[in-house]
Length: 107
Image (cartoon, rainbow, N blue to C red; front, side):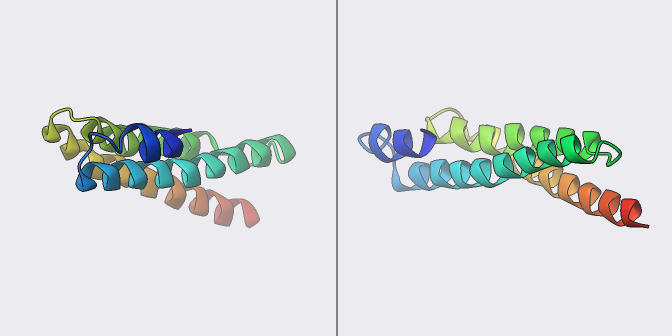
C-alpha cells in the first residue's frame, strides 16, 4: 500500500527526490518487515533462541529510518533526516545482534 501511495498519491506534488526517499523507505520497510516475520516464526519454532533484542533494535530502526524518510517525502522539515542514519544503525545493530545470537546458539 505504501508503494502504491508513493507511485500514485505523491506523484502529483512530490519532487523526484521526495519520490526517491519514499521508494527507499518502502523498500527497506518491506525487507525488514519480512525479517521481523521470520524472527517471529523462528521464535515460535525454537523458543530457546533469543530474538527479543534484535527484534526491538530492528523495529526502532524501521521507525527512525523509514519514518524519517516518509516524513521528508511528505514535505515536512528536512532536519528530520538527521535521524535517518540513526535508524540505519539500529537496523544494522539488530542484524548483527541476531547473527551473534545465532552463532552463540549454534555452539
